[in-house]
Length: 298
Image (cartoon, rainbow, N blue to C red):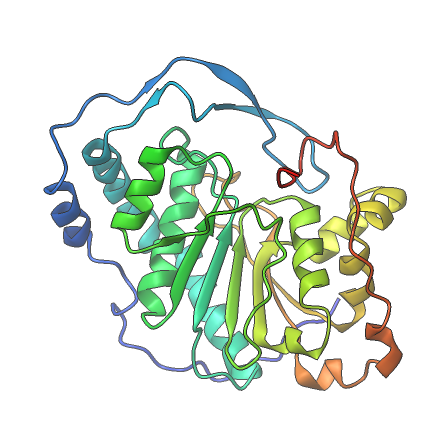
């Protein structure tokens, strides 16, 4: 595993990246009188760890009533919890260092997969709060979000917060702009999503990507080799050429951001790759009954 050399961080105004809580309050004032969030039917939720074990539950998008005002108020409180923590400040500082190493001035696009049911779960709300901090820090970035578990009311809230909903299940295969820097934020997503993203952008254009996702090293070292080959082949192949910055998990709730790392692909490292390395590029195929990866409808 490589470690990043220390660079001088780019200086920002200390509070510019923080989303003002009053902006959430102004959004709340536009909603109707709140109705208590209710849940009626429960199903298994593939809450994933590094090796994809199913551990928790989720509520279906059907029969779910979510009041926007109450949810926004809850998110405002969560944002207060998250924005001034040492973990958030550490993430932002490491992203600044990463952009310096990549010779990039800014992040132009943020793509977020896998937030989950943030109207129901604290972990998802905290992960969304970090996304809002990223949005406020990189004010020029267009932020796209997708999770097949979002209910209509949650999508309304996300749009009210200035986020753009990806309308279809891309299975992580979004092709990024080669002339812009894209941040991919995937908190606790499956190996397949990360693997698919690498497949879709396989080539030296990866130097324009920053991945805030499950540790590549953890995925490879902590899972059975046959599972890595079948579900994370592109992660395995690119590992020698990725710079991984481990994030010290100092957040109050250890399970929210555990195992996350920042991954960048420097031009210097990509230049070391033989030209024919990129030629082998077959679309990944996964087991249809794998609960940790939700495929698009065919």
